[in-house]
Length: 263
Image: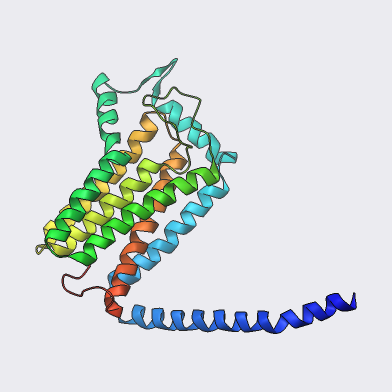
């Protein structure tokens, strides 16, 4: 017992030293971040607020996953989108299912990989390297994050209605919804940044939002995701895309990346 107490007492100074070092680093980072935020435009402050709200939304959905009123609402909405007594047939005209199958491809990994390669290639040719790395980090990191979260939560796909497209991965959060939010919102924000006219900026952001929304809706319509999967995917995608944008802006502030063509 005495030896154990001696061992503990010998480790305490080391632990305190490490704690002091960590606290010092955190204080420096917080101070630098606070100074940066204080000098930024309103868009950055709004982005921080949206990140916090989206994180809160994701956590709330995850806490209620598959339980209580959320589970009932998920199942009710899925059944609402099918013809009563004919679960293999979605509501609406026949062409709507084909359209949903086409639209959902916009959130697929192959399509988004192609979009990422085209976008980063163009930005590299234009020597907008900060924007290029932003797109690459958003897309690559988002793909990894989506895969990790799916495996972490391991939610089964909906089984109350037949799936109208093939799926293999876990259900929560919706990868298509998350990756579409990351890719299209990031590109929309970048293009809007480079646009001159205000109406052009509004148009680009609206198109990005529309693409993100229709991809998520198509996943529910096709019966491969619960609505809560899609909502969580949108929240996660919004958080990641805004974090990447904020980091890029911060690196410009520090002079780590070029300041020409602000992100």
